[in-house]
Image 1 (cartoon, rainbow, N blue to C red):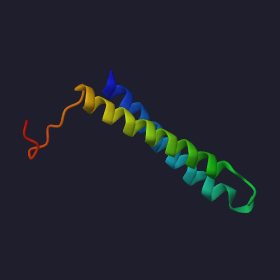
Image 2: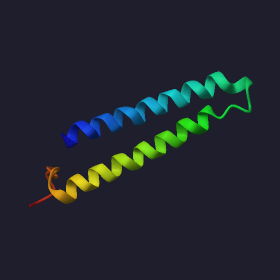
Image 3: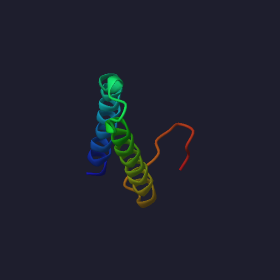
Length: 72
């Protein structure tokens, strides 16, 4: 369940990233448009939620490190 939540948050970050890119190109003629800033705020919030979710999963043991250099 936690891995699905991480994937959903990651997809939201990527969607916000690409929507911000499209707003950057579309709103060049409208300098008072705030859509790029809203996309940035959403992306920062989703990234913070993603990091908190990953750290909580590692802390509670629902996620574990399986890197070759990490010994148990």
